Image (cartoon, rainbow, N blue to C red):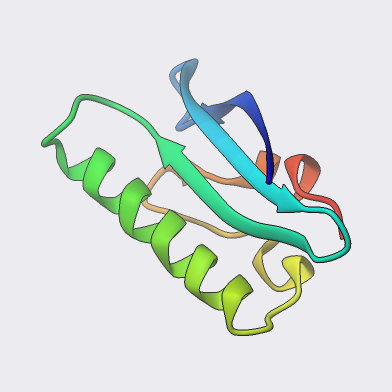
Length: 86
């Protein structure tokens, strides 16, 4: 398994989060991890839940394109589509 980590924009205030994408050769993207804000904050919980949902979707056979453009409540995951390639 190989992982790539990059910074992604969060909200409109110039804040950033950390996105880690794990891939397996011949399989593709198998997991994502998104960390933003302080541990225990609402935004951190939403980011963690979103990453878990995306990971479960990927492991269930969903294409990475199904998650491009995903975002809510000021948390922009636009970089998710750039960070994970089919």
